[in-house]
Image (cartoon, rainbow, N blue to C red; front, top):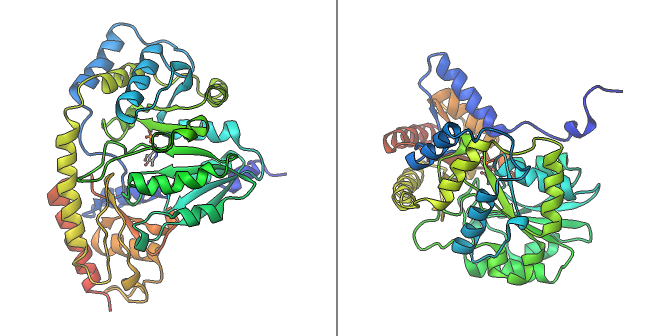
Length: 400
Ligand SMILES: Cc1ncc(COP(=O)(O)O)c(C=O)c1O
């Protein structure tokens, strides 16, 4: 009998954290490293939100709260769902957790039985398959290839559904590609789901507010109200409000599911940080004025990175609709040899050679389930991005 659980054998540690750690080690050793691996905005939490957290401490709002959120935050979330997504949830249909990550995890633990399948479009956020496995289920992947704008089609979804399918997990705009589904594209998927009433929809709307140009964000229960009764709409304050460290995520969904998720949380972590909850009330109820200027900044960075990366021989970089990632293909680099003599056999070798030979840290595509690619997080200053992209261009020009 082994000491560690068999479930843990099915799970791997987060590769995005591994890349960030490796880059930090090289930096500590004195190397000139540019990290493009981290999935968080580079700007600070807005002052009004910080002030709300400070006020909560000063007012002694520092004790346990209701397991899945204070009434004030639940109401702010209901108001947000109505305002932004035209979705009506009551406070009893809302749950708050320690980041979107815990909310997704709670939902899987609360619902999955052995052999239950969860359909996940690839490339996917690194944690999805492992969270499904920790919950005891089986991830089933559909490839959203570059030629399809990194999106899946209705036919692909139809073909992946089996009697064992419990959830379809949807994420738009996407981590790692930035791809965003238009209303019509999403409607094509929800039409398929209407024909399969046993399949529930978990939508991860974490990058909702990071939507650029003509692209308009939409979410499954909004596009197809008939799915409302079997949809969990997950969101959070981490990305749009630069609150990754405050750890607040939330979801709206059917009472029975929300109640089950509360049970999981009540026997694991209890309530999310009280102070962070009060700060999140301000994030959702307070001014949203900083979102537009931040997005203008992100659009400029996206365009800069896309233009530069497309100058690198062997790289093709589509322009995404949202989030702060690009997901270039390196198909044209495979089989070539770097200046240091490394044969680029796959995207992990590419990312390792790039880090060692140029000091640029990116996450390889295999971590997200679609190769050969890498992910760049462009949530950093233009000068840094220009320097990093120029190093990538030089690296690719050196491939023989
Ligand atoms: C697609 C996606 N969903 C959920 C999360 C989790 O966010 P949180 O920091 O709120 O746990 C992330 C964070 O990287 C993400 O990229």
